[in-house]
Image 1 (cartoon, helix red, strand yellow):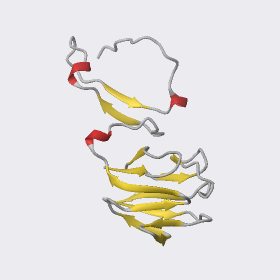
Image 2 (cartoon, helix red, strand yellow):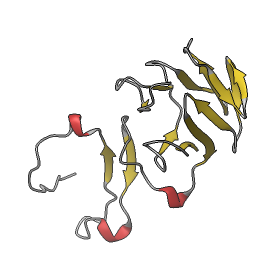
Image 3 (cartoon, helix red, strand yellow):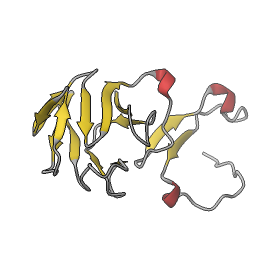
Image 4 (tube, helix red, strand yellow):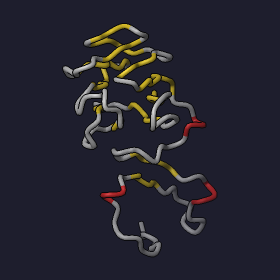
Length: 147
């Protein structure tokens, strides 16, 4: 799995996993990745899976998309590629175990709890799904679910 790491700007240090679905990038909050950069178009670029590779495509942005300092309309990304949109520099990198889940995920992301967090009475694995804050139900108490 891969990630897009923001290397400059207000969002510096944030990373977003790149999975098997289209990732939209731009200034508008409806994008998967929102970049608060006035030189980034509202709908600037997309990254989409192409088999085992990922294709970045400029969506007709005003200032263009650069990969490794070259303007591109479409290009397959490779680990280590640097992507520039407006004044923001990003890196396409391999997602490692140390990265953990990002709090900025906007799509559902299944996770399995470690053995220490499983219900010892049932001995079963509990699967959780992360959702954006907008889709979370009100906070309540934990209620075990019988199988």
